[in-house]
Structure formats: C-alpha cells, structure tokens
Length: 163
Image (cartoon, rainbow, N blue to C red; front, side, top):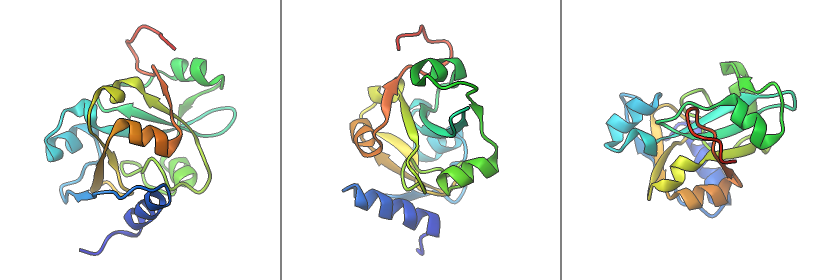
C-alpha cells in the first residue's frame, strides 16, 4: 500500500525523533475520536485529539484525550496565553501542514507549544493520527511526551483545576 504523503512526512518526523511508528490504516476513517476508537477497538479516552488552538501569541497544540473537551480557560491559565480559541481548518493546516482529523503530533513546519492532557497518561497505549483521517499509530504516553516536548496539564472541562 502506497502511503499518503502526509503519513510519509509524519513517519519521517517520527524517525528523526528516534521513533519507528506502526501505522494502521482504516478506510472508513478515524476523523473523530469515536470513529477512531470504534475502528481500533480501544476506549475513546485512549484516542489522542491533536487540537490546534489560536491565541494572542500564535497557535499552540493540545493533545487531548478523546473523552475530553478542552477548556480554553485552563489552557490560558497553564500557558499564560490570552485569547485562546479554536483555529479554522486553514489555520490548522498552516500551523501543522496536516488536515483536521489527521493532525500528527509531530512533523510540523515550526515547533508548536504543546500540552498533553493528563488523562492520556493513564493509558498504557494511546492512538494518534499519522497525517490523514485514515491513519493512526499506537504509542506509549511517555514516549509521546518525550517526542513532542508536551507539558502534561489538566486541560479538560469539568475537572477540578490542578495545574
């Protein structure tokens, strides 16, 4: 199977970080966390939503658990940034070079400040997008933190703020 150019780019970025990803393809798509969990056969919470947010200081990324909605206020509190909100699809592609639903946690044109939802750290294996809405890979949460430089944070709505 010929890999999509975005998946090849995600794999190359991973290789530069010393990672050898095992990419799984799902023709039906893994665009949403629910779709991905159903296709993979894992809990929705083990799906990594690579969310690109805008702020007064430019874009940032939150690697959120598929179970959670991200609190922009918590992201502001953790990062010290203001005016945090959702990016549109064009801004997501500009910041990451990937389409919405397929954003890899690495392989972006320029480094992005990255947070990782602490809830993802409770799983042995989590699943993230590999450049397209049809390609995902499993990874240990600690390995993802190390590869991305993501700061663990409580970013979920409905959680008591713990920093």
